[in-house]
Length: 371
Picture 1: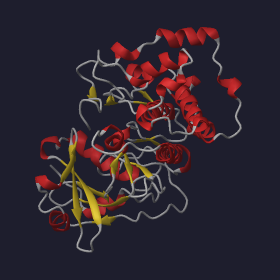
Picture 2: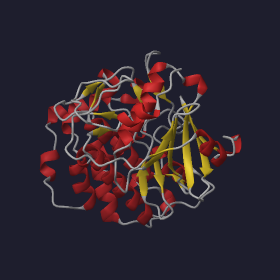
Picture 3: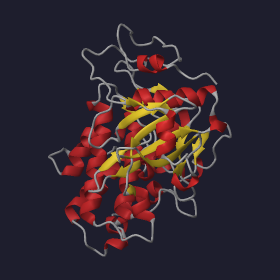
């Protein structure tokens, strides 16, 4: 394996005279030149620093494991708690190395209170990304762990709004238009005051302003969250994230997993419930009826728009926020023509999501395993 020199890694963040479409020395496409781009604040850690911080990457400090990376908690000499994402030795093929490095370039310039900041990286004796440590854990761990008290409605609403703002920033506020591709409860981490932060940009892609979408193969993502146009045709744009966010919203308000033990997807179940006008059946019973009805209706309405099979009839994240925050919006424009409604009913992704080609790279649902 060839590791990047430190100055090569730094050039990944240097726009200089490069234009879009030009590849750097590791085969990564550099986005268009941006006037006065913000300087990345990441630090180049030494392997020794990370080794000491994680107690030699001990199994006791392992807090997450995916298809090609492991995450360890650690503490720096100054007392700062960190999470170290390490590319595993068994995953060191050229494509995974490039994806790992692409993650650095993607998240390295994101600056938002609801996006997990990159603290730094290390390219000595392997490839490592360093982030702030979430001491509370992920949304998935708090919603689905029967051993912890259920989240109250106020906290759930705060998590939903914060996550929407973070995703809106990635789509519209960030100078590099970012499609996350893996929005799910286990990738939304929480601070001590339950502020959500979008994490894990391993599948994220830059989408140049002049492009309408990416066509990506192989298909990668998580069961229960995949938008139909992505699953069927590999088409990726902002609406791909919107669909996944809709599933996330349903998970937050209902307490249900994206895919249950009988392999029924949450978005399919939710459509059946909403079509019958039985919206109250989506309320998490663990709330004991203690929730704001108006806020709940807003989130349920936003989710119902997000999980539509047709990307054309899904809202942007700006419109999602309008619906969630109760701002004035024209609901009539979201009423679908009858022929479109019939097409929506025709699509049932229940079996589709599990009849995947063996060449696809798709993660197990959170109800079965984590990524």
